[in-house]
Length: 408
Image (cartoon, rainbow, N blue to C red; front, side, top):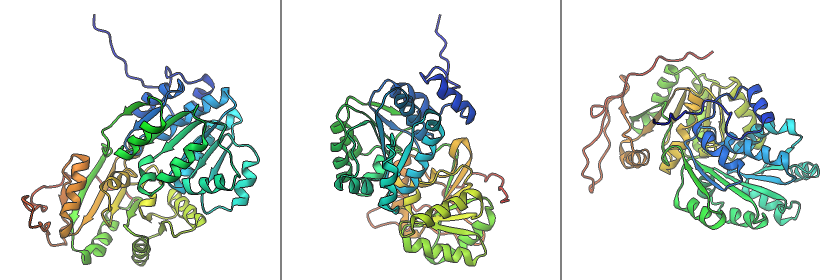
């Protein structure tokens, strides 16, 4: 008789302590996501992990639960290294929800916060340290922190940290952590540099991949508008009136983000901006205002592609295509989170056919080309060496759009 294979529909049977199960029930975390289902039992065993899962699938909780369970039994510490301040604060928020009931305190070590405040927090001997690489290295150089008690090291969004040039800092940080540690690395993509870190600094890591590297979330409807640069503003105005829910808009540069914010404000919409030129206080205010609905629209650079965890973002608009195709996956992963549907709209100028093809190669899917009835149809301009046929809205019709959600 063939044995029936049952799928896991709850956190029971994953080796999680009963008290943590009670906390999960209270927080209404009922069903584990695929990455949580696969990673939690292995992490609880103390095994090193390289976890690959698309953005918005619950990677943070996949390492939070095993860490809290381990620290509740032992006296060690955990260090979580993340690329951005926003992500650090969100990881801290997840840890607090689980760890508070066990008397385990946390600290966030990021730039933009006075060193004296962090020194005061460190004197309370926090057992979970969430840090960005630059500020953490500052503390290590000034000998205001020691990492010899760290038993669990987590590198979250490691590929993004490498993209931002943090590899030397990561190498420096790892030298301060005991070799007798558990190391977990989580990301949405797994380029060669990340693999090299795993090979060099991890002990026979288990590779967990619940979706191919570079895969976009399934419930996201994606489309591209081929539009002349000078028509972007007008098209954006039309779409912001069409999609009345929360909208996250990505700009390639900080200056561009500020410019887009100003023109959206002139259109009469509530809008905020978030990028590295904004102070930490300004960034927190913008993100909180967006979460609470005070701002319907948030304009951001790629610093926010991994750092915004807001359920219910209806639409992501790539006003500018990203410099790196992998950032496309992280950008659109801000919508369609936690099982919700979402839409990702990208503006591409006629000269950006090559950039669109790079994205399509990464996600292994052709992006549907859409057209707006009030704009003339455009085509990608082919380079002299290209043998592909020009693509326009007539080449690939977009699927029927779902009903619009009204903003309240």
